[in-house]
Image (cartoon, rainbow, N blue to C red; front, side, top):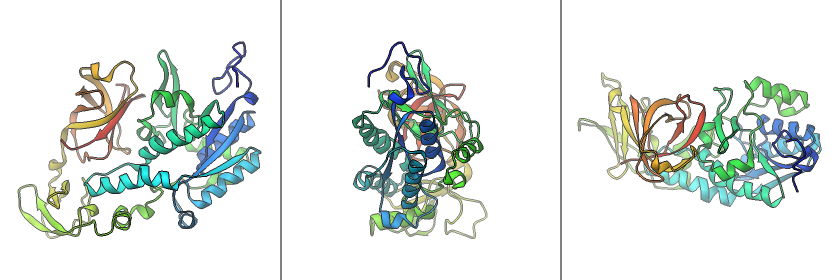
Length: 380
């Protein structure tokens, strides 16, 4: 599809008519991606909807509150039929298990708190699905993520979504410059989810009032331990619950039942001071607990860094940025000190509680808007 240099850029930034611009829309069956597809089809773009079947279809049919389940595939197909564009379902169960679920299980068993949604974007949606979009001769791929792609002097930049309550930049920090060049995020500039639902009603979509997904798609009811036990039978070994001062306070049935920062359900009642999980020692099979101040972390080791700030990350030699250490936490001031092209130490301006290996550390500009990439928190 050749661009016309004399044609003004269309809504997706291509110098040709929408009808000559093919866009693959990644459709989860939810309201967000459905609105993206409907809006682009209404604007005259050559839309192709693609939905990924990521896990067991039979089990998925009865699973509510998660994306990419059987009912969601049906909802995505119905949107395509309503708006008159083709829709395909691709079986990615094996890829998803190998690229996302297996690592999730192994990381959890190693005492980390992984974020599989980031890995899914990185290894499935923005890798294999994006390649499928190219194979379909698409000019770009659009998703329903609440994040903004902004044209900058050095190329496309990633910025937080206009609605801070919906912003999904934490989950997209590993997007590469090459991927960002091909991706579009039409909902990033909306100020509220109410706007999205209003657009869905305008298009007559039955998903307009569909609830947002709440759980990780393959973790029913947020019960991580139950999923790990199913994926890795017998992997949970009992051990001791130990205070940071060395006292043995009780026993546990496996470190997989605990997360850093946890306070409730420790199984060591009768103590006067409130205790939190300070760290998990998988090798010693110990859950180490202590007072709240034992959670405080000032320096965070980060690896697997994806840098989106232009130039060489390794040549930063320390830079004041803002960093986000959990998806639900606001960015905080920090200094990032590169150790190599993909590793760094992040010095927090103020100690943070509950920093957990396996979570992402996402870098932002000092004003908290532009996403400079990020990496994965690990143990020294």
